[in-house]
Amino acid sequence: MRLPALLMLLAALPASSWAQERSTVHLFQYGSTNAPASATAFLDFRDLMSEKLPRLASELLADDDRAGGLTNLDALALQPVQADGGDGLEPPSARIPNLQRRRQYWRDTGALALLTGRVKGSDPASLVIRSTFFLGELGQPTRRETLDVELPFTAAVYDTTNDSHSVVLLYALAMEALGMTADGTTADCNRQAHAYFLLSQASLRADSVATDDRDLGAALATIVQDALDAVKAACPA
Amino acid sequence: MRAFAGALAALVLAAPLSAQTVTNPDEITVYFPPLEGERNLGSNVAMVLSLQLAQTGRQKPWPDNPLGHDFNTSVMAWSDAPLAAPSHDAAAAAATDLDLLAQIVVWGDTRSYAGEVIAEVNVTLPRYAKPSACRGDVDPCDYRAANLETWTIIEGDSRLSVGPPRRRFGLSAIRLRADVVDAFGDVEGLPIRSGLRDGEVLGRTGLDLRFLEFNPQLPGAPTKVQSRGVTGYVEMPRITERASEYADMVGGILQVFRGDWRAARQSFGRVVENPATRTPLRLDALLYRGMAAFRDGEDGMADFEAALALAPYDRRAVQFAVMGHLARGTEAQRARASDLLGRQRHLFEPDDAWFTQARRLSSG
Image (tube, rainbow over all chains, first blue to last red; front, side, top):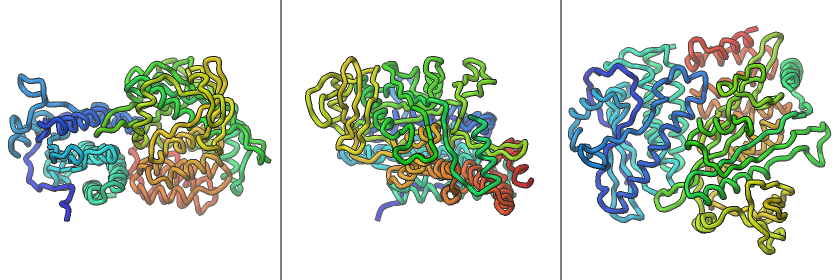
């Protein structure tokens, strides 16, 4: 029996100190990437995400009516976290070795999400990429501070790799757009249309993911539905 | 031509749906910059994409054309210069160059992923101002008279419009066949042969390529072309093992811009049915197909309802469904539009101008 593709970590969260809108995804070095095939896999994946995030934002912003209210989308990008004094990326163990440090880093830097992970497997033909998103307080409305996405590293799931990671980030952007307070009890309901717009986009992509990976697609769809329910609860008609 | 669109919409509101003659006064231009990546590979893949698209069009239905439709011509434009950046903004900027003024840009890149070569294809539909509002680079206009991609309903002095569901999107990644990657990387241009199926290679396609004759019914769909001083046939290479939705989706959009509603409906139908189609694109295809049905004098409400079921929180799906109800033109349908707007108010900004106008039309 396969493990669920998406794991949830429930946690109580402290208050945020970040005042600006969050828009960058901080990328750390993935683990288990010493072997050449694994290193290549991570580089291919990193290139994919680097190009796709700004393009996703550009596509969403093309809807004129929403451009004014989604200012943080314009800056949506992958931000590699460079290792101190080195050429490569920082491993998470250096700056965010535990949950407390992750929360602190997320609050202090204003990142939308922290992206860590690892490349699993030793056979170059059957590598798996496992990504872990840390969403900080943006995960509070659905009680998901951390989300994992796991997919084989193959060209056959190229679109699904992109879509699954996009779903998580669209969820985070929606929660950011709504501006729910840390305790999850209030929200800026004047911006609920933005949140619905982003969650609708996430829902469509979760449906696409299900064509390649039914379990992952279903797990992502559940997250999106929980977020929609949270928006409805915060902003009743 | 704007007057024509208005006249059709007014008729739709007042009488049973019926087809009208389409006479499109405008040429539609599709621009194919080379795909980013290895130079020859990107150029040759762009050439194949343009060939696939060119085969989807028709100027006048033949032999059955009792209404005398004339959808005008479409122009495929190529360049050997890549976009300034691999982005929708750069594609829109290139399209709005006064020497080009393209309505559709097909662009992308080729890249290695997991040991294969992927062609990523994106589509940008630049936004043009009306001729009366042209402000050069800030708000360029393409001087078209018809703008058939915009669906407008007019009632009295009020009008309500929707444009294309999305102006920027990506298609499913195309996994290029290894032999295509090898063959396309070595040479510039596709081979032009002397015969429909075989024959000697007379030359290769260049940027001055002209399409003379299409034969989509023949194996390899050979196209008679003229380029670099030679005339012959280019066979359509099979670049991927999996059926891509590219030609049907972009072909359908091109047909919408040209007013060929019947062909557009067929194209979008194939997109909807294609298992390779990603869900956001399937939603677009449903909305396009429903709109094309209404503008073809038939009822496309079933597609709008399918779109709402697929994407119940999507504002565009609500907009097209409201347009459909209003296009049906009865008091009962007007009430349904009003009810839908009331239930989905939360999907719109508090000061949304379209919503306000739709509310006015549906309650009047």
